[in-house]
Length: 152
Image (cartoon, rainbow, N blue to C red; front, top):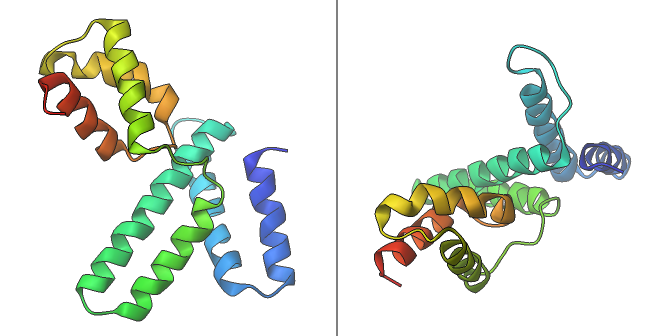
């Protein structure tokens, strides 16, 4: 069963159990997936990897919104965003630890022979399939930069 089918099944279950947070969050995610499927020149069905990218983006939006609400003094709305983020996270692959990411980066640097800031693109391209959806892009980017400039 694909990820989209799992989401749809879980939505039905959440509606039946009257879980408003879960059903609302899954609806938003399914809408984001549908929007992604129909964007561009022709409609297409997303692969599970592409759906994970959409889920990662949605989870990041929730984290950023929760921080913004907390900074603005809206603890209740911040908590709602955090709770929605937790629901979305259930559908993402297990996140890599920082040490795991550093090992993948070290392997990629050894494999590509990249050095210095100029090698960043080569290393990012090499590690992207291994970390997609499993680690925050900003964190990965800063770790690659640190590894290439010797700032570990």
